[in-house]
Length: 189
Image (cartoon, rainbow, N blue to C red; front, top):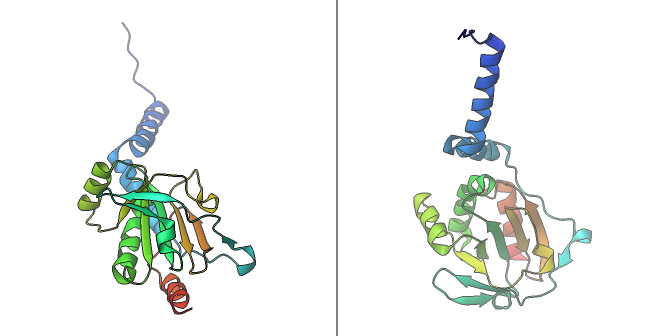
């Protein structure tokens, strides 16, 4: 059999395909996606007052990792920070450190609900591995229509009157000075 030496272009094409496969389907690729998302994360913007919508229901039921059931009704009149996330989602993982810093400083001033579709076992293992102390929940009933999203991460900030004042799909820097200023403003209101 007569074997030919592959051409330089063929070798480069194979190397490029292997590189793309590595980025898409390996832990290295996940790491790269997380780092890129952190680089492009900006402070979330507040929805213009004229475009804000009041949540349609407070009857949304959740359960925490200890099996305790809660409803949004319990937090009516408070500022509520709600984040939908998953352990397999690189953009979710990318924004978690900024959320942890925000949670550490504001957990006694606003309500935080980190809602996952992962099992509590998997989510808790992730939190321990990443050194996060965020309160996690699973949804028992559907969230209010104003918070339904087919994409994660999806994060919402609800003011004391029940208006959705931030609706951010995708990665954000939740620990930015500008977002903290917004939070402080709504806490004083």
